[in-house]
Structures are given as structure tokens and as C-alpha cells.
Image 1 (cartoon, helix red, strand yellow):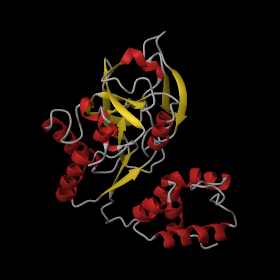
Image 2: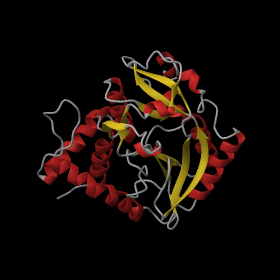
Image 3: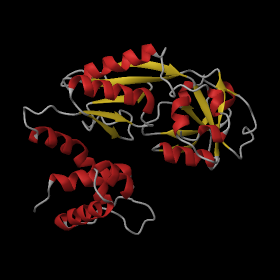
Length: 306
């Protein structure tokens, strides 16, 4: 069997992105080349990894099993094969959308200062790739209960309600936090940081729908399965014509943290964290374009990407 590391990288990237065009773009190859690599891997393994009868890219049970095994194996294999003299890129994980303003400025400063590249890794899980070593450090919303990780708060920002344009709330200019306790909530069970437990006992919303990523989350909101609650910067980067963003009063702030392992961390991970904190302090807790006032998003058109 002649399975190469390239085949495994292609498969893992496609399994994460669930879209051939996006995966090919992330890998820096053409879509036909990616398709050939996946076909070749299936031939070498003698099993089907993709369900080609599905309308969208989906893994077969064998594909899902292989993805689980490779998530931890491939990053360790890449590290083991890397020359000792080579400066390893810093893999930065994120889940809900990379903060393009201050995040890109931080990467530019870090790369210029240390001559080490930062590779972005999107992972739809609670620790954005840290749990299975797919990332060296991560930007994570909410609390980080894992005791083996060091979490540094970067900034806080308001939350905003995501409401279907067909909802009775869609005409409101503001919604109260306690009001949402009487509604059904859309819950992200994989990478989300908000649960019904964030409301007081006796005033907690029911879960109307569960999702695994931001796309499924907004689709459930648009379909009136429940209301959503997002950090304002995340809402700004994810426009949906059937979702209206409405300012929330009385909501606890959303907290973004920079997270890295307490032991065995990338040698420059802490240095990158210093740059992030400096930018956060300079901006008074946020960054240009990344802390819009909630009222800027009150109309769907205002949430369109720049």
C-alpha cells in the first residue's frame, strides 16, 4: 500500500471543509487535483470514504472513522518528519470565524518579527483544534475548562440576537436577555459557548435546534427553529438574508480567549499571545472593524461582509 502524507492531508482538509472548492483553496491545489487524490486514497484503501449519492460532500461511516483516527495522527506525523533545524509554523485554530482586522495585523507583526509563518486552521470543535493537536494555539469564545491549557482573555464584546426575518421579534429595535428565556434557542453543540444555563433558573430557554457550525446555526435560525445569540463581531462576518441581527439588552458579554497548552507548546506560541494582548489593549479591548456597535447590525443589509 502506497498511501502518502499528501493523500491524508487532502482527505482531512476535505473532511473539515465539507466542500471541494474550499478545501482545494486551503490546500493551494486545483479542485481536479484534490478529487484525484481522494479517489487514489479510496483505491489504495479499498473502501469508499465519500457518499457520492448525497447532494453535498458527506463522509461514509468508513470516512468518519478514518477522520477520527487521522485528526491526531497526521499532525504528529508531520512534526516527526519535520527537520530539527526548520522553524515550525505556528498553527492557529479558530471555529466561529477568524477576526480579520486585529487578527491579520497580529499575524503580520509576528511573522515579520520572528520569521515564522502562522497557518490558520479552522476546526469546528470546542477547542478549535487544540484537543487533537491539529493546532498549536487557538482563539476560543467562552470558558476553557481543560486544566491542561492556559487561557488568556483578549477582550469582551456585546452579544447580539440572531432572529428569523419571519419571527414576531423581527420588527423590534432591541430584545431583552430575559425575553429570550421564553423562546427556543438554537444551540451549537460542537463549538458553541452558550447554553440555557447562562439564563437564571426558572427562566431558561428550551433548545429548539442543535447545530455543529455557523452555517447550520444560521440555517436553523432562518427556518424559525429558535433564536440565536452571537458575539457582534461574529455576526458581522456571517450574513444571511433570512436572518436579522437585533441588539440585546442585559446580555452577558462574549469573551474571546487565546489558548495554548501548558506543556509542550510551540516555542513561540506565548510570544504570539503577547502581540494579541498588545493589540487588544491598544484598541481598548477590541480592534477596528471587529467590535461594531450592536445597532450597526440591526438591519440585515448592515451585516453584509465588507
